[in-house]
Length: 257
Ligand SMILES: Nc1ncnc2c1ncn2[C@@H]1O[C@H](COP(=O)(O)OP(=O)(O)O)[C@@H](O)[C@H]1O
Ligand SMILES: [Mg+2]
Image (cartoon, rainbow, N blue to C red; front, side, top):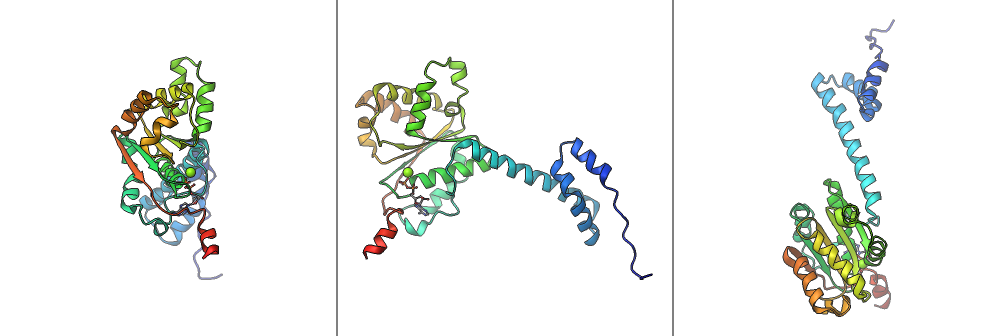
């Protein structure tokens, strides 16, 4: 016989069953590793419980974020972590990081990202959407064209049901590519109704290639309606005017040097 003390065989099946019955399936899966590790490091009882619950909470949250990202329609691969501030020096990193705290969502404020193609408007809008999801807010991303398509389709929906549509109810609605095409009077009316409803109720993040003075041209040339939309949108709004090079064209720039 070796002098080494035999470790007791852990009888975990019953415990695992109880954790599963309580809906703590991640803790149930982690139980064995957690206890072996606790024996190895001589951990106190409360530490074992703490680690087990932390595993459950972390994995549930990761699953929630994965599901919310999928349902939000946010395009993948764009985050604040992979935004290259050095490439776009006129973007104020501190301002973006402050927006990344998502106080604007809590506050039902809006964000308007303006600028020419390729400067990172969509990237930043999506990255802020990801942050909002991580913090537990409901987020939905639409290209304007798809949003108008859905709103036209839902035009006859009774108000009570319409208010449950994601573009009305999400804490943070991102509308990408406003201004590429001129809207019909009907579409401009639908957009106005959306912005009016969301005013004071939720945040709207808009990316656009058009400066505000050119907005009447987007909304079927209707100056009064454009003023009404801008009034609600800009009342509580961070406006980021991005001037700079196109990230998409940087390879071309290098080749032409
Ligand atoms: N500063 C940046 N750092 C990292 N990637 C960037 C940056 N700016 C733009 N990109 C990337 O370049 C592409 C075009 O950017 P995008 O945000 O779509 O531009 P915009 O919406 O202004 O036309 C995207 O793939 C985006 O992820
Ligand atoms: Mg874009």
